[in-house]
Length: 411
Image 1 (tube, rainbow, N blue to C red):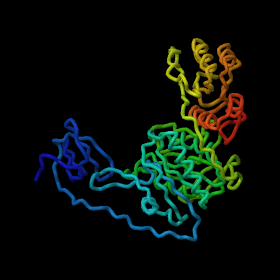
Image 2 (cartoon, helix red, strand yellow):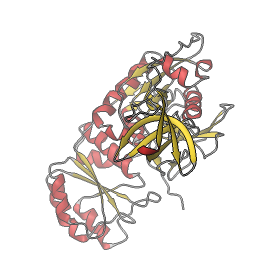
Image 3 (cartoon, rainbow, N blue to C red):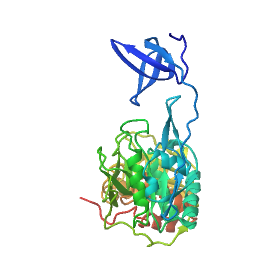
């Protein structure tokens, strides 16, 4: 039997060029159908190459409750979205995120043996939809969980903007316990998913002697180790590799071996209990990040007129074209803070070598040392949010507050 029109969830056979395979029909457009194979991978195939097999009954997938051991230490899971705790809807072939403690424990077997978990659903968004306002809510959620007795906090987050959020919470919450941001590059429906290993290693890190905000992800393409990156020195360096995240300009905070879950902290790691819990969640949203390129029209600065702060991501030691300088000087006179970082990522800004740099300093631009561009943006938003004046803002932006600046650059 064959159907003229397929419905999402139908089981189909794909036949093309003598090859056959079976899977779940998802959708079709412009004569091409998307089918989720039994292997978990999606393929695109001409719609006329499909043969209908069956329409499964719509069954509500029940998740078995997982018993938690109240004798184990308490860890909070604050969910913002992403694929780290997702499961397949076998009718539609789509992946849905789960937020309840029982859902997450079911999605990542073994967690219940490490700790007891309390789950908080903060939001359910793709990470590109993260905003400074949500950072504030996240900071308050993390603070509240620690205040309520959690010995560690895991923040599940989409990977694309996780470094921004980790930097924001690093400045907004002084934590005496680990705050571990974790994500997944591959969704749970794929054989190569990293959600289980990352989740288990994040739990181990949340129970460790750490006392700061970190990002934890795969160390390599193998399933043998995760790296713990400081929340203000980490960057996503690949679109899809499981080991996409790197610590820039310094060493990682530590590692977690898998499957033994041994946590190995480096000498730079802030230890549990070294800081008293505090929250500083005010932030100035009217800040911008400008990436300079050759031939860039200075008139583009008018789009940021009235902004409180601008991060200039300049070339080399921290340069922009000389025709920018007069515009920058005018905006500084009107009250906008300009802060210079480098596109090079490694190394530090020095605007005293060339004439352009000296002119930028004379105009009032602040040198950004070796701050990463996205961390510089978040820090400037946070510093301005505290209500400091120009001189104190300049001083704090050049001061190492939570490990965002290195005293010396690596050669």
